[in-house]
Each structure stands twice: as structure tokens, then as C-alpha cells.
Amino acid sequence: MPITQSAPLATLSSLVPGARDRPGDDPLFALHREATERAARGESILNATLGTLSGEDGKIAVMPCVLETLAKVDARTAAGYAPVAGLPAFLGATIADVFGDGPLAKKAVAVATPGGTGAVYQGVVNFLEPGQKLLTTSYHWGPYTGIARNIGRDAETFTMFRSDRTFDVDGFAAALARHVDTQGRALAVLNFPCHNPTGYSLESTEWGQVVEAVQRAGERGPVTVVLDVAYFAFGGRSARTWIDAIPGLVANATVLIAWTASKSFTQYGARIGSLIALHEDDSERTQIKNALSFTCRSTWSNPNHLGQRVITDLLTNAELRRRADAEREELVGVLRKRIQAFNEGAHAAGLRMPRYDSGFFSMVFVKDGERAAAKMRELGVYVLPLKGAVRVALCGTPLREIPRLVDALVTGAAV
Image (tube, rainbow, N blue to C red; front, side, top):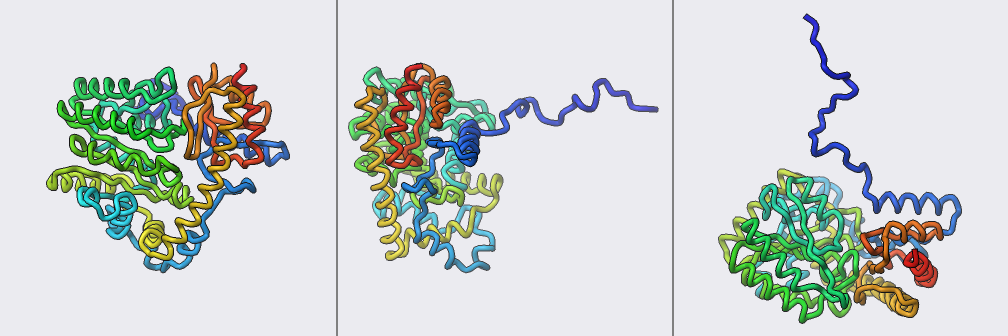
């Protein structure tokens, strides 16, 4: 007997409903591609979209010592599997990179991840139940939301800035308490220093207030704080301030640090990262390490072996470490000049923006982010539109192009 079919084959889909009608490309990379294509056709284009550091020649910056170390790794060794959780030497090196051999290092465990993105994923999947929400700033790196929703969680935000453009600590405290009350737990993702997309870094007093809020919430239920410190090596005067806050945070919460080699070693495509987890209790650290290792095996199976060996050498070999620090400092100097020029030009032009003294990005407030960015594209200047703002990638903007960027921002802000 023939099988009857109620719908044409063309209308049937094996995709689950939640996976349908998703965008096929990230808006940021779509803009980058458009800018690149226009430049290839000979147009004068300023592409301030991607978070990759370029030199004054407009080409992506690389650190010679990284490439040399990469070339010296034994090919057969690197071709084999790395341990599921990562090379012990690599994990120890990433912990030491943040904490040295001090007391916090003794409260830490780690697993290797595919960049900082993998570290954030680990935090969301292991510290929130399905259906629960992470908490982050109203301006934030877009994939936080995507990561959460892709694995059956969600995201909620609190207003990031007060009217004076300083961090809204009270808003954070209230939202954190509400999450503990409504979910029975809370996971906050804070991207400081050098916040993406705003460029904002917390001052010491603001960190102190964050610690107080976390401690109060931690008395009422389990609290986890993810510190996405992707840009901390470019953090200038605020580069180490966040570390001073960790003893207070870990007193009443689990602290997760999303560490990545993408920015600090200019190896965005290598996808080398580490999730460092801190907890006061030895047995709980063991539970956390086991959970994170299980997720490694069940998600990406084994981390990048070659990359781990390279980064381990760069972090632990004294001469290589010296060279890497010196080469990075040169890049920091390049970026610092751009930041100074941009701040001077933007303030002189009357642009409204948060405090910005370090990092890859800044943000300018406008009436309509989409309209402002579209107007700027007419001028050949590409930035990322946000709600009521546009993000500017100073990391990819040569110093000589800063005046053009500021002029385009003024035009965009006027629409």
C-alpha cells in the first residue's frame, strides 16, 4: 500500500523548531566582509569592526617570538592528542600568568578551552541549569547571549551605566540578588578590564562595590562570577586592579576566569584558552575540575595540542617570556597612541562616550546605532552598530585615520 504524505517533501524539515530561522552569519563578520570587499574594489575604506590588532600598515599584527616558537615544536608530538583537560604544564602556566605562585594559585584549577569563548561556554553549561539566565551588562559581547541560548539557557542584562556614565553598581547588585531569589543561583559575566564593546575598566572603588554585592548575594545562594579578561594584557593602569578583587569575590562565590591567548599573543585563530576556576574548598574544586573535564570531552573532545605547547613555552621559558613581554609592550604602545589621539579628538568634537583608557574598543553614544553606522558606511567608515551607540575598534584603526574616524562619528551621531 502506498504511503500517503500530508505535506510536500520540500516543506518538511528535520531541524528542531529552536534551530530554525537563525541568522547564517554573525552581523560583525558580515560587516567586516562587506568592508573588505569594498576595499578590494579600490574604495577608500576604514574598517573599525573586528577585534584584531593591526599595525600602522593596516596589516594584522603578529609577535615574531610566537611564530618562531611555533616553528620549533616537534611535529609528531603536536600531532598527537593532548590530554582531555589540557596539558598540565599549560594549565599551570595560565594560572601562574594571572596569580604567580601566590595563595590564589593554590585555590585554582583549570582546563584548556577553544579560546575565551570556550571558557565562557564551560561556565554557562556547568553553573546554570537549563532554562536559567546568566546576568551581564546591558552593553556586552553578543555571543554571551548566543552561547546561553544555544544550550538551553538565556541571558538577562542590567543597565551598565548611570547618567554620569559610571558603572551602575547598584543596578548590578539588585539584579544579582534577584537572580538568586528567582533562580536559586546566579551566574554573572563581567568583561573587565577593557570591556567589549565600551572600553570601560572598573576603578578600584568600583571593584570594591562589586565584591560587596557578590558577598551579599553569596550569603543567600550559590553565586558564580565569570571574569572575561580577554584584554587584560592591554589594560594599562587597570591591568591588575581586577586581581585585587578576587580574594573578596572567592570568599562567598565561585570565580571563573576566562583566559585566552587570542589577544595577549595575537593568535586569534589558534583558539587557545583556559578556564581557571577558584573556590575556597578543596573538595569543591575537585568537583569543579571533574565537571569541566567532562564537558571538554563531551564538547570538543581534546584541546589544540600544538597551540598549548607554544603558549606554554612562551609563558614558562624565561627568555621567550622576556621577548613576548617586550614585543607585546610595543603593540601596547601602538594602541596607546591611538587611544590618546582618539580621546582628544572625540572630546574636542563633543562626542559622548564612556571612560576609555585602554583596550581594543571604545563606544560612542548616538541616537540610533543602526542609522549612525549606515551613515558612516556611506563615508567608507565601518563600525559595529549597537542600541543607542556604535562600537569603534581602535585596535584596527591606524593613527593617521583617527581624524577621519572622528569626523565620521560626528556625522553619524547627527542622524
